[in-house]
Each structure stands twice: as C-alpha cells, then as structure tokens.
Amino acid sequence: MSISRRGLIRRASLAAAALGVRQAFGEGRWPDQTLHVIVPRAPGGGTDILIRNLSTGMQDRLGQPFLVENKPDTAAVIGATYVARARPDGYVFLACDNAFYQNPAILKSLPFDTLRDFSGVTMLANAPVILVVNAEGPFRSVSDLVRAAKEKPGTLTFASGGIGSSTHFGGIQFGLAAGVNLIHVPYRSSGAALNDLLGQQVTMQFGGISSAKGQIDAGKLRALATTGASRDPALPEVPTFSELGLKDVDIMSLWGVHAPAGTPIEIRSRFRDMLLEVMKLPDISKRMSDLGYNRIGSTPDELDAETKRLVAQWIDLGRRVKLAGD
Image 1: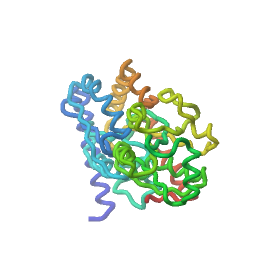
Image 2: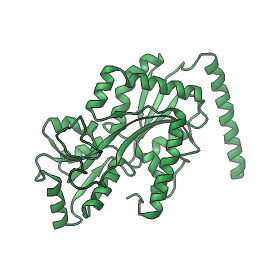
Image 3: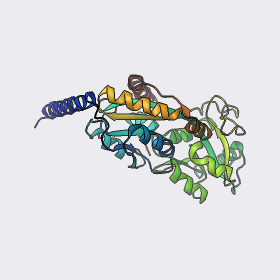
Image 4: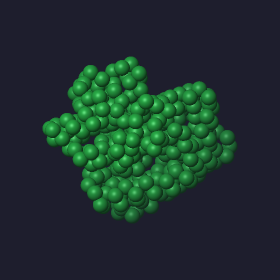
C-alpha cells in the first residue's frame, strides 16, 4: 500500500469517526463513558499536579469518571503518540507541557505530526521556572552556583523534568547567561527530578513551583531564583533571574490540552468550557495560585493558532542554535 493511499484511508476513517461523534453529540449522548486524560510525564510533575487538581470538579460536571493516566518518558513522546493514534471520539485528551511544542525542533523524528495529528482544546496555564538546590548543600545564592561552576567547569549537574521541557531550557538559558558549563540530567517529570535533588544526586534543579513548594516550605529545598517579569506571589521572597542580572533566563512553563485530530469542535469547546469553569472555582483558583499556576483558558481555535506559532518559533530558533536533545 502506498503512503498516499494509507493517508487517504486514515483521513477517511477519521472523517467517518468524527461524523459518528457529531451525530452522538447532537443527540446529547456525549459524554456517556469515562474520559481519559493522558499525561506524558510521571506523577508529581507540573502537568500531573495541575490536571489532578481539576479532576474532581471535572468529574462532577461531566457526570462520568475523569481518569488521569501517566504515560511518561523523558521527551514526553509516548503519551502524545498514544493520543495521536486514538479515535477522535471525545474520550481521549492530551495534557502537555512545553516539550509538545518544542519537540519538532529538538528531536530528529517524531511518530506523529504535532500540527496535523492534534486539535486544540485550551492552553490551561503558565508558570515561572524555579531554580532550587538542596538546603543542606553549600549553595545559598545564584552567585554561589556560578562561582562553583566556573571553578570546576563541567562538573555541576542540573536536573529537569525532561528533554524539551521548560525546565530543560531554563537550565540551558542559565548556562548561557552565566557563561558556565552545566551537565543536564533529564527525568520523566519534575517530581522525579526533585527526589534525586533531595538525595543530593544532582547539584540543582530547574523545576516548577507546584512540585517544589512543599519541600521549600519544609526547609528541605532552597529556592534561589525564578523566571518571570516580576516575583511570583507564591514565593514573594525569591528574586527573579532578571533582578540578578540574568534577564535572558526568561522561559515560562506552558500547559495545554489537545485532542486527536478530527475531534469535533463542539466537544472540544464544551470540554474547554468545563475546564475553565473548574479553574475559576474559588478553592481551585486559590490552589492554582498557591502553586504558581497562572490561568489562561484560551479557546480551541486560539490554541491551534498558538501551537503553529510556537512550533514555528522553536524550529526557527533550532536553525540558528543547537537545540538537539541530550
């Protein structure tokens, strides 16, 4: 079978499936079964924490189980592949981070097309990236880290939530801005990276406030700096990199929700509206703020446009500087 014929068959299958879903939606039967939200990271990371904070409210609105499934790897590809190959019937969604938008510029090949194989639901939120160290270690400031990295180049390690994540690029930006050579150690989520930082198996971690704040409050981690234009309300005592003279360390974490290509806009819009309703609940809104999340809630069409812009932006950057994964 030729590639073009396979493509035609796949498009015809998707169109038929989408037609069936539109008919079911029009008859008011969606949703009538469990919804699966695939998180391509291990438990304990920013994506996982965000989605699980919304799960109870979503289940109440859907009237069906809202199942969060972790399908992790260091590049967030396995979970995305699963969703790309799923039926566009409104029962499987992808909750992703920056890696989804940056992977086309980082990885030599992907088992899916980021633009063609997915349809947008909403950009849920963004948040700063935070630099933390073990509180029992010798580093009390960013300048301490920079000094040590310059004295012993290529020996200090930074953990991230995975290749292509915002935390990966936070470390890259820091190394470039400070003029130091750091060794990247990617994990399947920020939560997994955090465990090794607590065990002093890595020097530092670029992570999210959501996964690190509990250990910061407990005095086990020391927060040294965050990205962002101003200090984050969740950690007002922590300076920004810009304050410290490292204004080029500015990446923000992003979290979006996508569906398999061909999922009807009616379902995607309704799902987005439910997510936004839950994020606006007073207790959920406060919880998100306490964990450093900033609500966005874009429409499906807005997310599709933003995805095209982000993918193009990172591919363009990849042509100018080395972005290849470790």
